[in-house]
Image 1 (cartoon, rainbow, N blue to C red):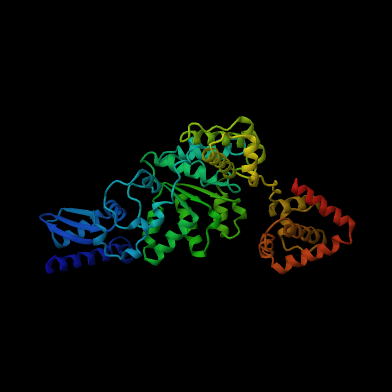
Image 2 (image 1 turned 45 degrees about the vertical axis):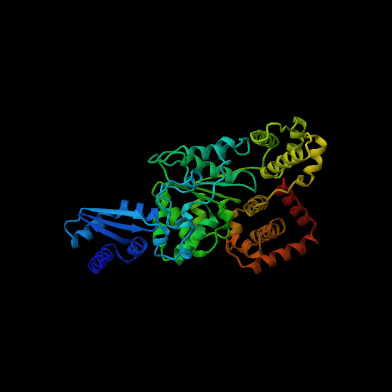
Length: 472
């Protein structure tokens, strides 16, 4: 490039910076280089396909007008993606999804992770990995997950511009009951066409993308790109940490919902129990459709086992599991779907490696460590407050209030005692859930009721009755 072209390019960049502002310029144009000026065309390059797509879509007229102020004869701006060798940013600073790949087609699995034909100059917007097995076709529907499946299917079948029915759609359940399967199925279905931009991210990947954008001073580009998604799918929200990251998630959630875009979220507990999240985020999540996926019933477990055997036969045609063995596994392995899949994998490995048919005796030996004692019911603080309030004829708001009358103080102390003994919540967490009280207040209540229960048989009977009600 000649000195004259360099000077002209510097002036064009100065005009562009003045026109769009420093933040927008540094986010979108700081890594744009001049390749050549030929006749009436200017050829520019950027390190990623996403930057090329975004500049062409949103700023092509602005770039052209800045050039025409220097060269009136220019009537065309071409933007290309330069090779990694030409990339002006050191490779170690570039996120994995932004390494300056050329415009060759991406593999189908990679293309499905991102939302648009050009993913992003942020690793997070490349999407978290998707398992090709986790589709609606392979999801086994039963009584415990019918509503969650129907809601997810409704979201997946939506089209751009359609009114959004459930927003956000919030699915919660224990481990291994199908949350991730449903969320990835929504993503696969949405990416089957090109009309909508569907992005699947784990909370960890969202955090990584935002922090990386802050470090590279491209947070504005990250925010704008994220809010251009039609369907944002966030998995394992309970792992979202950090005040700044949570605030950004809250702003993104609000921006997408207010713009009529779809948000789908999964976590291992309902919104009210996500105690590490800001109250505004929990409130917005609870304002959509909240669906719990219950533990798998025996019929559903049997259906899952059969589907896994059919999937295994696609690669091992001679593999067979007799019906009595399937029924034994469905009856004995009650914890989650992953244990069921693990059981089938063990039987397959044993059968193939030892060249033996699957028998009931073999199954009993191979899966003995997967047969766990049934877990006690997970008790929620809201349930404790509701049942204690009903027992003592007060309202739940009384328990959370600052009232100090005797008819409220004792039920409040009993509820705090039960929260400490029947849940895994810490004293500060319990205090916050009881009207923002200090942990020392909770500790005093626990010690008070412990002392009274050992002396007052009437109170002891009441506490035992409350425990039974909560555990039924």
